[in-house]
Image (cartoon, rainbow, N blue to C red; front, side):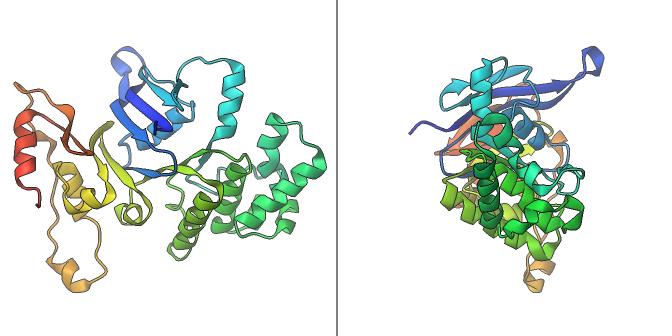
Length: 307
């Protein structure tokens, strides 16, 4: 089966000349239909930039993005662009700033339908009501304004705005990081339920590996704009190879106080890499497990893998 989304050697830069900075450097990955693909990294690692490039908000400097085998990066016909807007939607990080405070919930959720379909008002109202019910909110909330809701409710409204378009792919950019700890699990469970009901595929962006372990099928870890490791979730947690990924995992808290006290944090030092003679590349160290390393590093990392 062909991947739903393909990112090929994607580089995204901001600024020009001496002020040019690369937010993403030669990133490559595939997302299979029906899976949840996670991108993890610290703030400034470039994970959100990748998500917004998939949404065609940030143009790539080089490389390309394919959707269902067709290129969607760069200039495309208007008809294709409108079709993609329906198929690819985004859930934003901050539910407080991603909703128009001056618009009623009905207008916020229905905006896509109004702009990209010719449905009668009654049908639009019915679909808004269904979208609200699907995210666990009463249909009567459609007549209210965003400031009347809690952060968790506002994020549910943001999710309703995405699913009402009946997309195939949703880019979820830190969808629970701005929420109270007590309701994060509720929103994750909701997203899991909607994935089954709507046959969704997710690109899930987060800095929280403990959440991604429960929610993602595969995970790519990023450091300063570059994907340094990519593997299925179980493999990444049991056999992390790149020292940056090992550092991230060592910082994940353990609920067992005895285990937590015994844990040792692994600090990552990018100066440990010597690429003066042997240049690194993104290689498949084992089936489905990719790392950014040179030949010497790849051999060394493989030796410490668990059998």
